[in-house]
Length: 268
Image 1: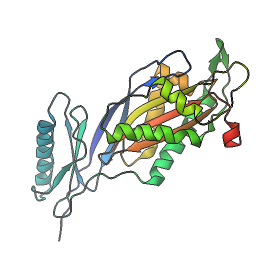
Image 2 (image 1 turned 135 degrees about the vertical axis):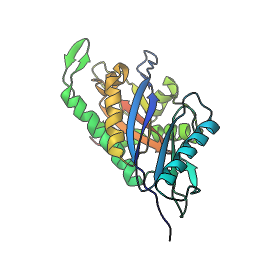
Image 3 (image 1 turned 180 degrees about the horizontal axis):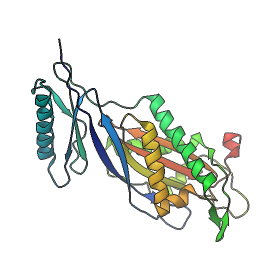
Protein backbone atom coordinates (compact mmCIF):
# COMPACT_ATOMS: atom_id res chain seq x y z
CA UNK A 1 0.00 0.00 0.00
CA UNK A 2 1.44 3.35 -0.98
CA UNK A 3 1.02 6.59 0.92
CA UNK A 4 0.73 10.02 -0.65
CA UNK A 5 1.66 13.16 1.23
CA UNK A 6 -0.32 16.22 0.18
CA UNK A 7 0.96 19.72 0.81
CA UNK A 8 -0.56 22.69 -0.97
CA UNK A 9 1.80 25.53 -1.78
CA UNK A 10 1.59 28.48 -4.06
CA UNK A 11 4.20 29.31 -6.67
CA UNK A 12 4.37 32.59 -8.53
CA UNK A 13 6.09 32.55 -11.89
CA UNK A 14 7.59 35.64 -13.43
CA UNK A 15 7.71 35.89 -17.20
CA UNK A 16 9.03 38.45 -19.60
CA UNK A 17 7.86 39.34 -23.08
CA UNK A 18 8.47 41.92 -25.76
CA UNK A 19 6.71 43.20 -28.82
CA UNK A 20 7.83 44.14 -32.32
CA UNK A 21 5.81 46.37 -34.62
CA UNK A 22 6.21 45.57 -38.27
CA UNK A 23 4.56 48.54 -39.95
CA UNK A 24 7.76 49.87 -41.44
CA UNK A 25 8.63 52.08 -38.49
CA UNK A 26 11.06 49.52 -37.12
CA UNK A 27 10.82 47.26 -34.08
CA UNK A 28 9.70 48.68 -30.76
CA UNK A 29 10.54 46.37 -27.90
CA UNK A 30 9.36 46.44 -24.32
CA UNK A 31 9.71 44.07 -21.41
CA UNK A 32 6.74 43.08 -19.29
CA UNK A 33 6.09 40.75 -16.41
CA UNK A 34 3.34 38.16 -16.24
CA UNK A 35 2.62 36.46 -12.93
CA UNK A 36 0.53 33.33 -12.75
CA UNK A 37 -0.28 31.72 -9.44
CA UNK A 38 -0.54 27.94 -9.36
CA UNK A 39 -1.65 25.59 -6.60
CA UNK A 40 0.08 22.23 -6.48
CA UNK A 41 -2.07 19.58 -4.82
CA UNK A 42 -2.32 15.78 -4.86
CA UNK A 43 1.44 15.87 -4.73
CA UNK A 44 4.09 17.39 -2.54
CA UNK A 45 5.35 20.73 -3.85
CA UNK A 46 7.96 23.15 -2.63
CA UNK A 47 9.09 26.52 -3.90
CA UNK A 48 12.66 27.74 -3.94
CA UNK A 49 13.54 31.25 -5.04
CA UNK A 50 16.59 30.70 -7.19
CA UNK A 51 17.52 34.12 -8.47
CA UNK A 52 21.26 34.49 -8.21
CA UNK A 53 21.77 30.86 -7.26
CA UNK A 54 23.14 28.02 -9.32
CA UNK A 55 20.75 25.39 -10.63
CA UNK A 56 22.47 22.75 -8.51
CA UNK A 57 22.21 24.80 -5.32
CA UNK A 58 18.57 25.67 -6.03
CA UNK A 59 17.68 22.04 -6.62
CA UNK A 60 19.37 20.93 -3.39
CA UNK A 61 17.49 23.61 -1.42
CA UNK A 62 14.12 22.72 -2.92
CA UNK A 63 14.72 18.98 -2.51
CA UNK A 64 15.53 19.53 1.15
CA UNK A 65 12.32 21.53 1.59
CA UNK A 66 10.25 18.79 -0.05
CA UNK A 67 11.67 16.11 2.20
CA UNK A 68 11.05 18.26 5.27
CA UNK A 69 7.40 18.56 4.23
CA UNK A 70 7.22 14.80 3.80
CA UNK A 71 8.67 14.16 7.23
CA UNK A 72 6.20 16.61 8.77
CA UNK A 73 3.39 14.55 7.25
CA UNK A 74 4.88 11.27 8.43
CA UNK A 75 5.59 10.18 4.86
CA UNK A 76 8.75 8.48 3.63
CA UNK A 77 11.34 11.24 3.23
CA UNK A 78 13.12 9.24 0.53
CA UNK A 79 10.24 9.59 -1.92
CA UNK A 80 11.36 10.29 -5.47
CA UNK A 81 11.63 13.97 -6.24
CA UNK A 82 11.90 15.46 -9.69
CA UNK A 83 12.45 18.92 -11.08
CA UNK A 84 9.73 20.69 -12.99
CA UNK A 85 11.93 23.64 -13.82
CA UNK A 86 15.67 23.99 -13.23
CA UNK A 87 16.23 27.44 -14.70
CA UNK A 88 18.39 29.55 -12.41
CA UNK A 89 16.32 32.68 -12.96
CA UNK A 90 12.88 31.17 -12.37
CA UNK A 91 10.91 29.62 -9.53
CA UNK A 92 11.87 26.00 -8.85
CA UNK A 93 8.93 23.65 -8.59
CA UNK A 94 9.50 20.11 -7.37
CA UNK A 95 6.93 17.35 -7.28
CA UNK A 96 7.14 14.18 -5.22
CA UNK A 97 4.94 11.21 -4.51
CA UNK A 98 5.70 8.81 -1.66
CA UNK A 99 5.69 5.08 -2.22
CA UNK A 100 4.56 5.25 -5.83
CA UNK A 101 5.72 6.23 -9.31
CA UNK A 102 7.37 9.59 -9.80
CA UNK A 103 4.92 12.35 -10.56
CA UNK A 104 5.98 15.09 -12.95
CA UNK A 105 4.55 17.81 -15.18
CA UNK A 106 3.09 17.02 -18.56
CA UNK A 107 2.26 18.86 -21.75
CA UNK A 108 -1.12 20.57 -21.91
CA UNK A 109 -3.73 18.64 -23.83
CA UNK A 110 -4.86 19.76 -27.27
CA UNK A 111 -8.15 20.80 -25.66
CA UNK A 112 -6.31 22.94 -23.09
CA UNK A 113 -4.25 24.67 -25.78
CA UNK A 114 -7.35 25.37 -27.85
CA UNK A 115 -9.10 26.79 -24.80
CA UNK A 116 -6.13 29.07 -24.05
CA UNK A 117 -5.86 30.41 -27.60
CA UNK A 118 -9.62 30.85 -28.06
CA UNK A 119 -10.00 32.47 -24.66
CA UNK A 120 -7.15 34.92 -25.25
CA UNK A 121 -8.66 35.93 -28.58
CA UNK A 122 -12.04 36.53 -26.91
CA UNK A 123 -10.49 38.49 -24.03
CA UNK A 124 -8.61 40.74 -26.46
CA UNK A 125 -11.86 41.49 -28.30
CA UNK A 126 -13.46 42.38 -24.95
CA UNK A 127 -10.68 44.93 -24.46
CA UNK A 128 -11.26 46.28 -27.97
CA UNK A 129 -14.97 46.75 -27.19
CA UNK A 130 -14.19 48.59 -23.95
CA UNK A 131 -11.43 50.90 -25.20
CA UNK A 132 -10.85 53.38 -28.02
CA UNK A 133 -8.12 53.21 -30.60
CA UNK A 134 -6.47 56.05 -32.51
CA UNK A 135 -6.17 56.79 -36.21
CA UNK A 136 -4.43 59.85 -37.61
CA UNK A 137 -4.24 61.21 -34.09
CA UNK A 138 -7.98 60.95 -33.48
CA UNK A 139 -9.83 58.53 -31.17
CA UNK A 140 -11.79 55.87 -33.03
CA UNK A 141 -14.10 53.04 -32.02
CA UNK A 142 -12.66 49.58 -32.57
CA UNK A 143 -14.28 46.61 -34.27
CA UNK A 144 -13.64 43.12 -32.93
CA UNK A 145 -10.77 41.30 -34.56
CA UNK A 146 -11.60 38.59 -37.05
CA UNK A 147 -9.87 35.27 -36.43
CA UNK A 148 -7.21 34.37 -38.99
CA UNK A 149 -6.26 30.73 -38.31
CA UNK A 150 -3.89 30.78 -41.28
CA UNK A 151 -1.59 33.22 -39.48
CA UNK A 152 -1.23 30.98 -36.42
CA UNK A 153 1.06 28.17 -37.69
CA UNK A 154 3.99 30.56 -38.20
CA UNK A 155 3.52 32.00 -34.71
CA UNK A 156 3.26 28.50 -33.21
CA UNK A 157 6.37 27.34 -35.07
CA UNK A 158 8.35 30.29 -33.71
CA UNK A 159 7.10 29.68 -30.17
CA UNK A 160 8.03 26.00 -30.46
CA UNK A 161 11.46 26.97 -31.80
CA UNK A 162 12.10 29.04 -28.68
CA UNK A 163 10.89 26.22 -26.44
CA UNK A 164 12.80 23.41 -28.17
CA UNK A 165 16.06 25.31 -28.15
CA UNK A 166 15.64 26.74 -24.64
CA UNK A 167 16.09 30.25 -26.02
CA UNK A 168 15.24 33.50 -24.29
CA UNK A 169 12.17 35.28 -25.56
CA UNK A 170 12.95 36.93 -28.90
CA UNK A 171 11.21 37.78 -32.14
CA UNK A 172 12.08 36.93 -35.69
CA UNK A 173 13.15 40.02 -37.57
CA UNK A 174 10.46 42.45 -38.69
CA UNK A 175 11.19 41.40 -42.27
CA UNK A 176 10.67 37.73 -41.39
CA UNK A 177 7.35 38.41 -39.68
CA UNK A 178 6.18 40.46 -42.66
CA UNK A 179 7.35 37.72 -45.04
CA UNK A 180 5.30 35.17 -43.09
CA UNK A 181 2.29 37.46 -43.42
CA UNK A 182 2.83 38.23 -47.08
CA UNK A 183 3.02 34.50 -47.79
CA UNK A 184 -0.65 34.23 -46.83
CA UNK A 185 -1.61 36.18 -49.96
CA UNK A 186 -3.98 38.64 -48.29
CA UNK A 187 -5.21 41.56 -50.37
CA UNK A 188 -3.96 45.13 -49.92
CA UNK A 189 -6.54 47.22 -48.09
CA UNK A 190 -7.62 50.52 -49.62
CA UNK A 191 -7.75 53.74 -47.66
CA UNK A 192 -4.10 54.15 -46.79
CA UNK A 193 -3.82 51.18 -44.46
CA UNK A 194 -0.35 49.61 -44.39
CA UNK A 195 0.13 46.01 -45.47
CA UNK A 196 1.61 45.33 -42.04
CA UNK A 197 1.87 42.36 -39.70
CA UNK A 198 2.70 42.51 -36.01
CA UNK A 199 3.68 40.10 -33.26
CA UNK A 200 3.45 40.12 -29.47
CA UNK A 201 5.06 37.41 -27.34
CA UNK A 202 4.88 36.42 -23.70
CA UNK A 203 6.35 33.57 -21.72
CA UNK A 204 4.21 31.86 -19.13
CA UNK A 205 3.83 28.59 -17.27
CA UNK A 206 1.28 25.81 -17.38
CA UNK A 207 -0.42 25.80 -13.97
CA UNK A 208 -3.27 23.44 -14.95
CA UNK A 209 -5.48 26.52 -15.31
CA UNK A 210 -5.51 28.00 -18.79
CA UNK A 211 -8.09 30.58 -17.75
CA UNK A 212 -5.48 32.09 -15.41
CA UNK A 213 -2.84 32.05 -18.16
CA UNK A 214 -5.21 33.79 -20.59
CA UNK A 215 -6.38 36.42 -18.10
CA UNK A 216 -2.92 37.24 -16.74
CA UNK A 217 -1.28 37.46 -20.17
CA UNK A 218 -3.92 39.76 -21.68
CA UNK A 219 -3.90 41.95 -18.56
CA UNK A 220 -0.11 42.24 -18.72
CA UNK A 221 -0.22 43.15 -22.42
CA UNK A 222 -2.84 45.82 -21.70
CA UNK A 223 -0.61 47.26 -18.97
CA UNK A 224 2.31 47.56 -21.40
CA UNK A 225 2.04 50.63 -23.69
CA UNK A 226 3.53 49.00 -26.79
CA UNK A 227 1.54 45.78 -26.35
CA UNK A 228 -1.61 47.80 -25.67
CA UNK A 229 -1.04 49.63 -28.95
CA UNK A 230 -1.16 46.31 -30.80
CA UNK A 231 -4.24 45.02 -28.97
CA UNK A 232 -6.06 48.31 -29.63
CA UNK A 233 -4.81 48.79 -33.19
CA UNK A 234 -7.35 50.37 -35.54
CA UNK A 235 -5.39 49.32 -38.62
CA UNK A 236 -5.17 45.63 -37.72
CA UNK A 237 -8.38 43.76 -38.48
CA UNK A 238 -7.31 40.09 -38.38
CA UNK A 239 -5.43 38.20 -35.69
CA UNK A 240 -4.47 34.75 -34.50
CA UNK A 241 -3.18 33.34 -31.22
CA UNK A 242 -0.77 30.41 -30.97
CA UNK A 243 1.09 28.74 -28.11
CA UNK A 244 3.70 26.10 -27.36
CA UNK A 245 4.76 24.45 -24.11
CA UNK A 246 7.58 22.27 -22.85
CA UNK A 247 7.28 19.29 -20.53
CA UNK A 248 8.74 21.39 -17.70
CA UNK A 249 5.67 23.64 -17.86
CA UNK A 250 7.33 26.61 -19.57
CA UNK A 251 5.38 28.10 -22.44
CA UNK A 252 5.39 30.83 -25.07
CA UNK A 253 2.25 32.57 -26.34
CA UNK A 254 2.36 34.33 -29.70
CA UNK A 255 -0.15 36.86 -31.01
CA UNK A 256 0.10 37.79 -34.69
CA UNK A 257 -2.04 40.45 -36.34
CA UNK A 258 -2.65 41.66 -39.89
CA UNK A 259 -3.71 45.02 -41.27
CA UNK A 260 -4.25 43.47 -44.70
CA UNK A 261 -7.61 42.41 -46.18
CA UNK A 262 -7.64 38.65 -45.65
CA UNK A 263 -11.27 38.07 -46.63
CA UNK A 264 -10.02 36.31 -49.75
CA UNK A 265 -8.59 33.64 -47.42
CA UNK A 266 -11.09 33.46 -44.59
CA UNK A 267 -14.26 34.20 -46.51
CA UNK A 268 -15.18 36.92 -43.98
